[in-house]
Structure formats: C-alpha cells, structure tokens
Amino acid sequence: MSMKVVGDKKAMSAAEGATHWMMVNFDPAHPGAVAKTNRLLTELADGLEPRSRVTIAAPTASTAGPLQISLAGHDMSTTQWVLLRYDTTVTGRNEDYQTSVTLNVGLGYGPVDSGSY
Image (cartoon, rainbow, N blue to C red; front, side, top):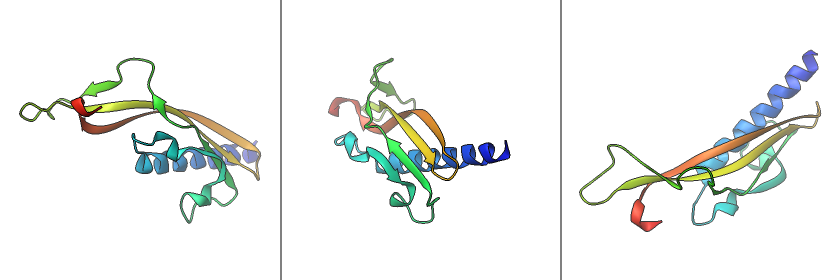
C-alpha cells in the first residue's frame, strides 16, 4: 500500500511540474508548442524526477463558458483587458511504481486587450 502512495505522489508531482512548465511557456499564438507526448520530466527542467514521464495535450480554446473573462480593475481608459481561456490535460507517470495521474487544466492567459483576440 505504501508503495502505491509513493508512486501516486511521484506521478502527481510530475503532473504538477509539467503544468507549471506549460503555464510559463504557453503562448496563445502557438498553443500547440507546449504539447508533449510521453516525454521525460527532466526534459522540461533539470533537477526534476528522472524516472517520471509527462504528456501535455495541446491547449484549445475553452468550449464551456465565455472565451474571454473580464478583469475587474484592469480597465484603462477605453481599453478593456481580459483573460483568454484555454483547456488541456496533463498526465504525469512514474515508471518505477507504474502509477499515473491525469489533470484537467484550465488556464487563463492575460491580461490582453479584448479587441486584439
């Protein structure tokens, strides 16, 4: 039982590390650039778990709810600033323990000028 718990934690840590990397490197002009399939976690950043692998699906514009969310307090003169909404999944796996965790991730990119997207 304790081996399963350790494996699940390592898989979750891999998924969290990949999610952080995706958020730092995401560009709405090229959303597929952050997609990875069965890649070693150490390819994303040195010092991460060497026996874990990750898969990041290409983020797509959210189909549930609005594509843009207004940001209170970010209205400057005539420009309205918004967050652009995207959805993806991130899977972390640990090879030593044969465990896997999949996260459904929603991300907001911005603030951006509402008229530019």
